[in-house]
Image (cartoon, rainbow, N blue to C red; front, side):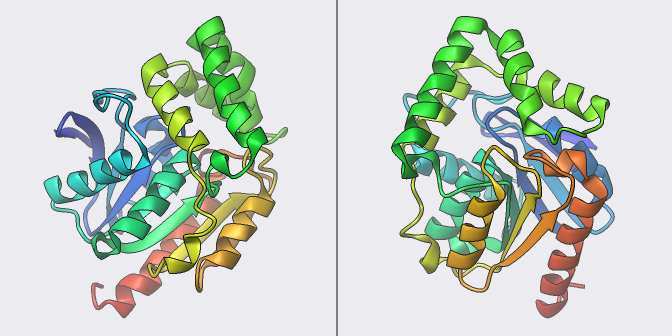
Length: 265
């Protein structure tokens, strides 16, 4: 694995083949994809970002909207010579990935939405929850915030080491980066736009996800034309970290079919 930077955004890159770009959730970083960087690198050039405002990446200027994050993805694909790419987003990363598929489908081979949603702006409760998280982070600090919230991202029976890693990643969030992400989520509702997505789409969800929830992933799969749904039993919201073998297998199967159809393999 190597670290590289494009326009003040940090990336971890492993393997070779058709590009697979990974966008983490609101409490994560590129390190949340360790199991995908190692497990899928035999088939793909796997590229995981630290989103702007996270990890080693600079904040976007001002008060960025969702289009600014989507534009950062497109710019990165071009800077990394990685278009068209398979684009996989977890949770908040999936919301960004959805916007890329709506705005710039030409840069994508496929779209994978893992434990994601249409956006928190869909309901008043969702908007309030995002604002409450920002206040909680400011009041508690990152370590206490992560200790309180992180365990909710995994299933009750999750391995202790996985739970500890999820908490540790969340404890590294930067207030401004998290605040921008939460504001963007609270302003987003893709409900009316899912039907225009033409990119081949896979929706993956942990069967015990209580954060975005299985029902929300089913809606994504139902409303995006021809999308597939895979549920991973025994996994919570952080399905890619909790059940990496099953998660990677679902992704690998989906991408292999597309790459063969496209004459890549």
